[in-house]
Image (cartoon, rainbow, N blue to C red; front, side):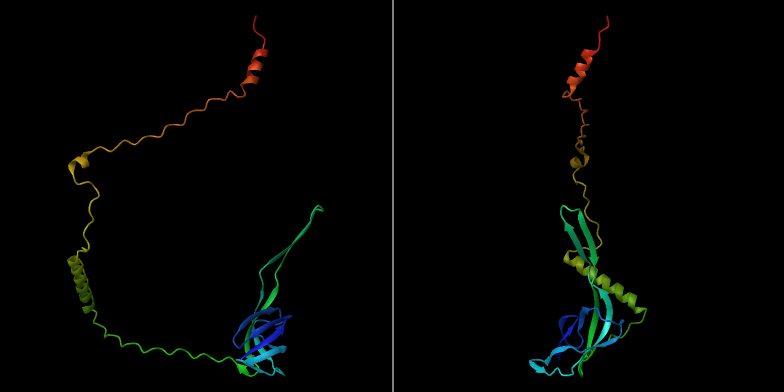
Length: 199
């Protein structure tokens, strides 16, 4: 069954078991409230009378919405105002519509598990494990995937390549010292000319 209720100036389509976020209502978490402004009710495609019909709900939590920034500016008047706002909300869980309550879902039946093999004595477990491991290794060796052998050496096998010298690594050249720019040398030359010569 469903119903359309009005609260906080807004309309919500609800059914038993639904959770909705509405404008702030008085109460604490866990309180029961009744929504009496039912606009429409029905089940499937058939509508039902809303005379005296109420929606029972439970407050889950009192919360706030995301922050909204309110910024005002009047250009050329040095006027700027910045404010933040978080709207207050109430989270409701719809318990029942009139006499109609949420149908409880049946717990899924546990499937019959196959009977576990009889546990082996502690003495037999390590021996059986070692035997299974040895069989697996022998199968891999037959298939060509040898387990536990070292990898090939990355060094060259022939003697000439082994004795060859390594190529010299070029060293990066040191950065050259910058020579002073002659771009602004004219003022210095003019200053030198003005000094009196020794007689």
